Length: 536
Image 1 (cartoon, helix red, strand yellow):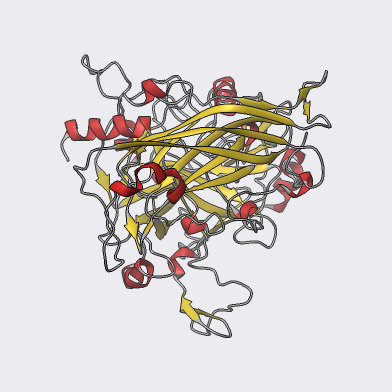
Image 2 (tube, rainbow, N blue to C red; image 1 turned 60 degrees about the vertical axis):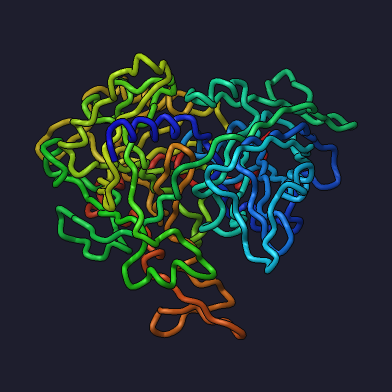
């Protein structure tokens, strides 16, 4: 790919909307068109409605019907999806069937007489259609509405490997600067409030309910990338304690032998795009339909860390001004106790890895592109696609309560220095400021043992398209235990392949020196809290 083509791709990516990261909170949904928050049943609630406008390619058809649905998601602004926030589910989801959205142009579409799927040519002129939408019931609060047209009809909010948009889907939302986004600007989502504001700053739904109406949603940005499907292929441990990349363990008191010299001081996980070679065939067909043929590749880009719409020297990792923060972001999120597919809700406990492009040195050499005088919109450096990336694990976690923005977050760093006495954080205030900018609240720093537990592995693109391990492809459900050889999940009536590469986990385990953790215990802010969703 040429540098010019790369620049064009990244302009498109910078415009692509940060979409949802739906998780198990949607699993209890019985009505496929509206998720009903259980705590709101029977009481006054809020409604958001408006008009959706789609501009893009005509839809596909199959078996005499229009393929695809428009998916609209209302997010509590305190729980926005990654990479903007720490949310793991939408507050509510609504679906507009393709038959409804494209009803006005149905007679212009082509239907294959045999019922086979028929999609328009790439050069087909775009169409513009509209439909009404409603999201309800909602608790009091502030919301953003995001969405996409699921063009290939493969979205399933209850399935981790199908709960996000894929390449070719058309993104959008209730955006204040829709015209600017279409030419490359980052989106500004409209904040929609429901309920009466109380003196303490919270909101409450009045007895008669609350409604925000006339909200315009635009879908018009075709997503160019697939989700970053991956598996851990190797682990590199300076202590030589790990040899299984699917079961990596970091002691809660991990300490660098010599920090800053090169990446060899880090515990590192090598991630490969796709699935293991022997799993490709099973992964590409039912029930998974993963985009693994041909082998996919990761796309690297600089993160706009301070959200100023520019890509410059300020967009660095909190640890060092010399190291840019790169997508795909590598995040390790603590799981609920005893659960492999459910994240801990409160607080969020996150270990953010360092995404390395080839090596620590080459990553440090990544620089933003020179501004294009013909295009005032921001551009990002294109470093080419690669089938491999390396994640260096920081011995540090962020603990934050997403429902209580008044409570400071805490950065837990396992040791103040490396074994040679060199400080890990050379500028604590700069780190606090960087984290405060990123998470919208003050931050404290604690030198203490890391929160023990199991952590999911996540790679996240700026579009919000993400991939998570473990997922259902590698984990058998309770009613379909795995076979003795671990190759399949078998129920009373059927069986399916089990992809071992998709059952990987990071564990922050017991310390090497229990006395150190006794003197430097994990901060109380990292202890599990109530999982109540609303917190109003």
